[in-house]
Length: 169
Image (tube, rainbow, N blue to C red; front, top):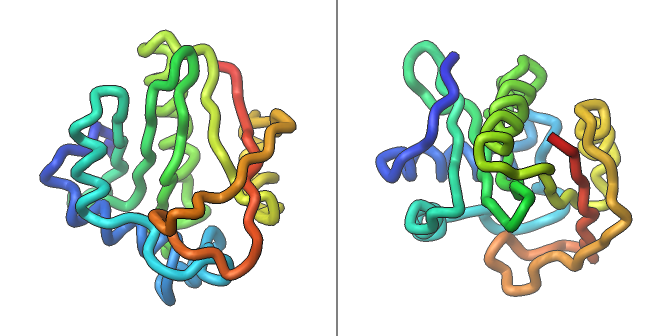
């Protein structure tokens, strides 16, 4: 299953994948759903297209034998660190190594881009997700950030805080 850089042509498929991994009924088939925490969509095609206009951003895609995108990750160079976000795996394929492969490829890209660490934010109440990242070498930095209040990434159903996690590469 190859992991390659996504292109503008992938936007419609990425949009469906990311939203199915985070929100709505489809997301509830996997363990990474945020549907009980947030309303609305995670991303739209306009936002995805904007990402491809930014040279600091790379979106990696994991494709199956039929060429369907089954996993993706957003990576953005922020100084000496690579920010990892919008990490998505098809809900019906979670637990099958797609996410682990994408994280490994992100670490390779970080080194190629001369970044010394990968950083991310995770909803503080997502204990099972935090534990999953910890098992892959990420640690909480102690920094806490508020959730985005502009509604661009969904509307919280409760107070949401983000913890910052990081891994040296």
